[in-house]
Image (cartoon, rainbow, N blue to C red; front, side, top):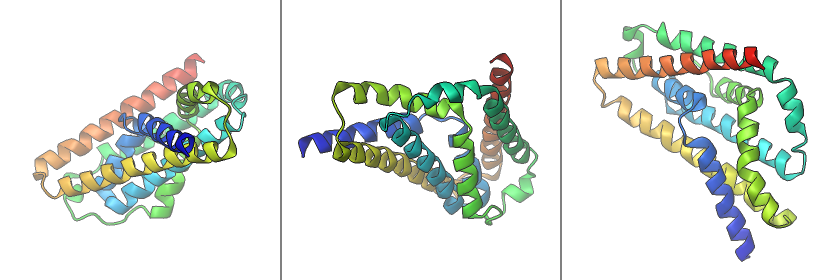
Length: 208
């Protein structure tokens, strides 16, 4: 029982280490929450949490040998991920201030938000690589039983989805308290961040 609890806590630590740093998925969640509401932001996070958990399951199952295969297709995946981020950046940066200041309407369906988040994390080689780096020391310390592996995965998913719910809810609450000018600036910062990450993905894919 103690070992199971330890595995749960270890999984939660891994999940937070993956989710909390604000990267392209975090910026995407913020931008979608600002423009389409908390529900769409949370579904975006749910998509990320789903793929993070799948990556963890693949690694725990001993299929980390797939990592070299992912690395071998890194150029294509990096190009696709960069294209997706640049598309999101363009939509964000070109959004008119008057449109942004309107009450959020679900322009993007929760299903589409979830699906695109899953797809982006699936084609992002860095996502699998980071999960592999974080889980390897844990898996290597002792043999994982089925129960411990399940608790580890539960910890990863619980921590990741909890973070995305907190982030989307926080941004949604903050939205109503921001001045129109500040709201526009925050949206533009998110767009610039997505533009930088998208450009970096193209550069990495070109140098692989």
